[in-house]
Image (cartoon, helix red, strand yellow):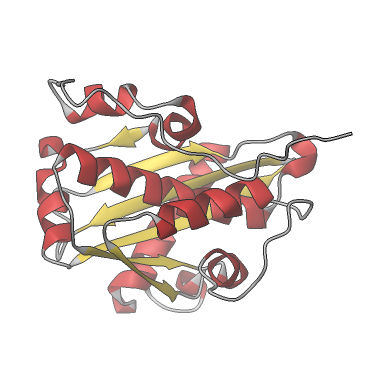
Length: 212
């Protein structure tokens, strides 16, 4: 018999006349398919500094995932050319216990950053700009941002990967990605690490505290 396969999702369009008193109010209005990504964030100044950084193409993001006892979490940070006005978030990876893995946690962090950026751009009426995203999960980056790899509906983490690709495809801004080696503080003094590595260490510590 005939049947349908749902292989993605789309935004629920808000009324153009809707107005919000704050960024947090706007985020609370988002559909559940997005809100889990942005439910636990800390933001200053309504996100104005990061919004301007996105417009000026100097915004960066770093995310990291953690997996323990069949439970996955991720932490992420958005910054401009300095840490002033940074936005920090933590997220619980969705799915059943059998779905979770370190790989899924990394993917969840990537998706959470992209959903936050999309909504920040919408709130601040940003139609062009860029964010450079770093993650220590090389396989997650390669799969999520590949122009050529095929995505099959029956493969693990299809839901998260498809959602990332949807955000990427329909984003108004340019996404650049880079791999940063994880746990560099184990063999290098923290003060000797570059900014990407230092932020990765910070997110690793934050996500491990969250999962505990």
